Image 1 (cartoon, one colour):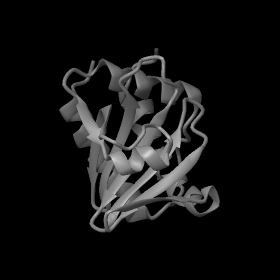
Image 2: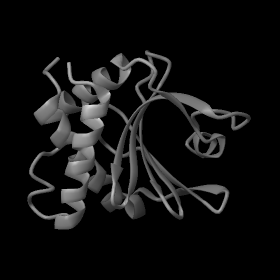
Image 3: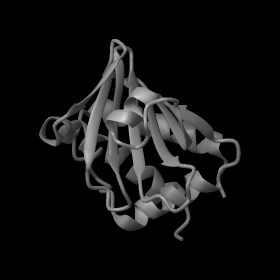
Image 4: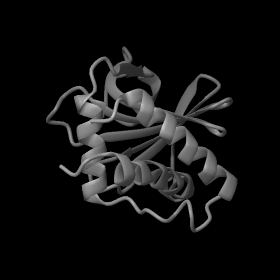
Amino acid sequence: MMNLGLWISRMAIVATVAVAFNGSAFAQAVMMNEDLMARLIKFTRDQPDSRAPVDARICKVLDLCDGTKDMPLKLAKSDSTDGIHYFGLPLDTNSKDVLIMVKHDTGVSSYLTDKTGRLRVAAILEKGTAHLITNEKAAAKFNAELPLFAKESAEQLPKN
C-alpha cells in the first residue's frame, strides 16, 4: 500500500495541474464513482495517526455535532495552489458521512457527501462564522473537488 506522504505529494501534483487547466477535460477525465470513493474511504480509514478535528462551528451547521467541541475525523490531505484539500471521515466506522473540505486564505468550504459522491449539504466558514450555502451555489466547487480525489484513487489506490 502506498504511504500517505507519497499519496499526498501526488495529490498536490494533480491538484496543481487541475488548477492550471481550470476545469479542462484533463481535470475532468476521471469521474468519481462508488468504487473510487470506496477506495478513498478504505485508504483514509486504514491510515494510522491521520486524526484531525473539524471546527465545531462547521460540524454544527452540517448537523454532524452539537457545536460544543471540534469533531475528530480521519483525514487525507492534499496541498494545492488554491488551498489545502481534505477528505475526512468521522471516527465512527458505521458513519456513512464523507466530508470534503478546502481551506483557503479566506476560509474553509465544506461539502458533506457519502459513498455515492452526491452533495448532501455545504457550508462555509468565513471570518469566524459558519453558515450553510445552497447546493446550487456549492455544486460547481464541489464538483471540481471530486476529480482531484477520483484521479488519485483510480491511479494509486488498489481496488477493494
